[in-house]
Length: 120
Image (cartoon, rainbow, N blue to C red; front, side, top):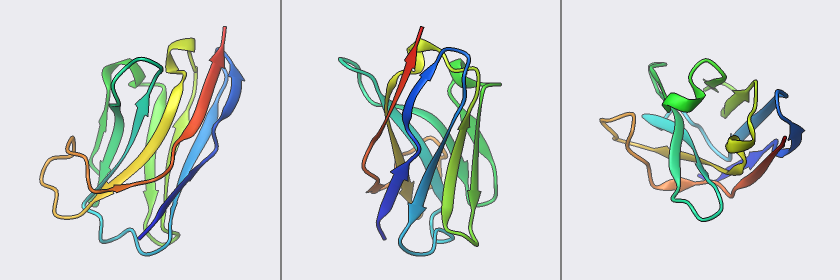
């Protein structure tokens, strides 16, 4: 299964973007899916994750602003990002894994990154 991330772009602070991660096959096999981001000079970090059952995790700085969802019928995972801040600027990667017990554990499948730039 391949993952294809899209939806990044340039937005002003306070604006919104919606990222999508389309899979070449069924995503129902993935116990956990998530979005990670990597800002210049920083380590990749988990932003949000969602389990097969719909449980979610959000990194503290995005709580209340980002919403993760998955549509198993359409094989797509999404990240709705509102009230964007300059510190949200990063390359965002989608991730998925099977047989994962912890929602905060990265899986083996990675999409290519999509760049989100938030201007002040």
